[in-house]
Image (cartoon, rainbow, N blue to C red):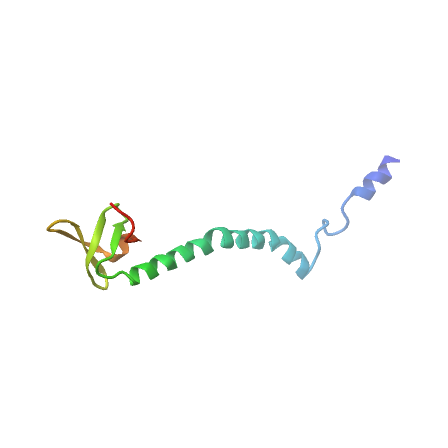
Length: 111
């Protein structure tokens, strides 16, 4: 009695895996789903943030108040293609790489 039941629960020929192209697709489906999840949760937001930072760097102009990635607050005195000169105190100007500007502060923000 139990022998027939065990035979009925056994796998058929081929190990129970579908054969052919649909079998190959089904084996890669979990990897595809994981990649899609990583794309929407990690890669896409990071690309968006990098694009916004690049746009911000392109729009820096003289007179903007900025904060560097090192935490230095300053007023933009001069802007070139790769560098920014910041006034951080009276008669103190420091030249930074443009990519090290972290954010542009609004004029309403106070020190």
